[in-house]
View (cartoon, rainbow, N blue to C red):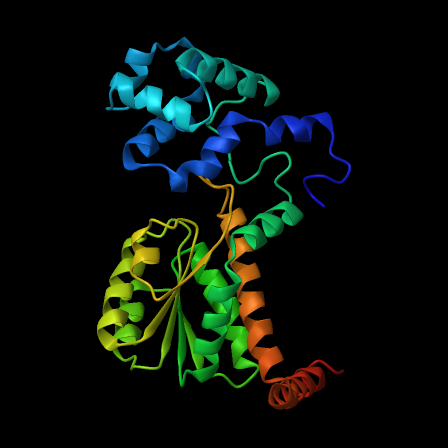
Length: 287
């Protein structure tokens, strides 16, 4: 597969790159460790020249916090961490963290999907599928690139006669969430899990009594903690983004899994809907 099949030296270097490891582990770090990680990722080029005290000062932490951070990342001390940073910079051809981190060597489509499959909880997927099957109404909420995923979800579930709609505007999301009832489902997409508009919608959906399904990267995010069902993705994004490519692919993968789960569970009924919509579209495109 993406990580092992035909892996060359450059791919091995990426796999062992401390900068990529920082990016992937960020969601599991403490708030203080996250502050250090963010500073390192945003100022990578200058890190090898900083003392432990200077890094602590610039990241607004302490010497002891930086040392604990190094140990969390698997290093015995600060000097070994600096060597790891220098080695990683060399393996990336001298590039700094000022790069499009969702476009990386080794981060191909297959890898993104593989990583997402590793973090998905099959029990949570089953709960989400069951909630969507039972719901009278399913609403999809997302801002920006996540909104595009909502539109894809609406198109898919509409074809199997599921009452659903995608909302990509903050004001419209609040209105829709306020009209949800107990038994309805709100599916909220946010890579960071702390998008302001989505958290506002989450709060309204909670008051409405709807079942809330979060699709996000971070387990400790406000979105994940405030939802009934949590579906986690794995993406390479952390700093500059080229268009949320990694998170969009991972979220689309989740949508496909949910759609397949619902369609498979109700195949006899849904096959008729798919055939009807297919025939209508086929007729539309005939000369």
